[in-house]
Length: 258
Image 1: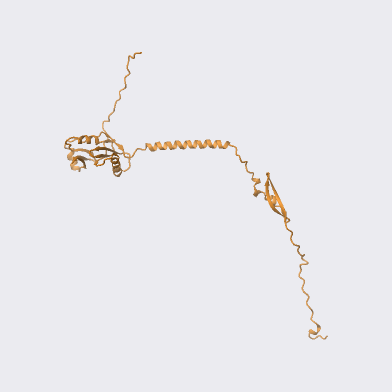
Image 2: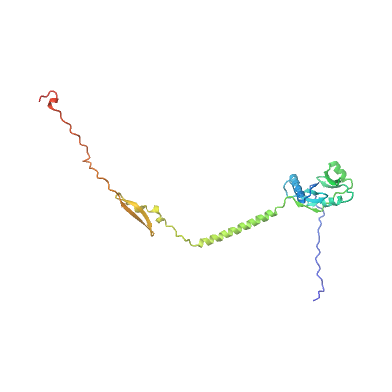
């Protein structure tokens, strides 16, 4: 079948904001650092020391000459000045370029083949701004110094989901365990050893309990005769009889003649 009409792709309209929020503070430096990760570490360390840990701080790095530029912003839309700075310096005779920073001008020039960055005073900044040289426009992409809290939100949601699953599994196990019949029969409280004192309470003085034994679900007592005691004298016999005292002879008594 021949298609008479061709479907057209819808046009995508890119909306460009009328004004981009500028950073409240911008810092650019060049260091003879060969590795990009070392330049990124230096930028993050400066941002944390200057602005503290917040999600409104941005950083970017670019390789230039035998080192790296690094750039740090506080606030703004996260657009870097480094692409414009490098384009302005990659000319046979580079001139001075500048960017706004804290109400002043941050000037970048090349001396002896290496960039030099300096934050000018208020008077010199006013002179640069009125010289007719436009500041470098921001166009590059920057990274946040401190990531937003979305990874923590995702981790918390995953932990919450795991907790719900564990709670549900424990509830199902409890329901299953409640229906399982116990292998061991329940213990009868009246069959415990300390509840058998009534069996041995009638021992009396004539027999002793030699053994209390539990066999085939019943308690039995093995008695033993108590040893007999020695016979004791009656109270009349136990009375003390005074010993006989010999009477004195008449001759021993004065005044009596034999």
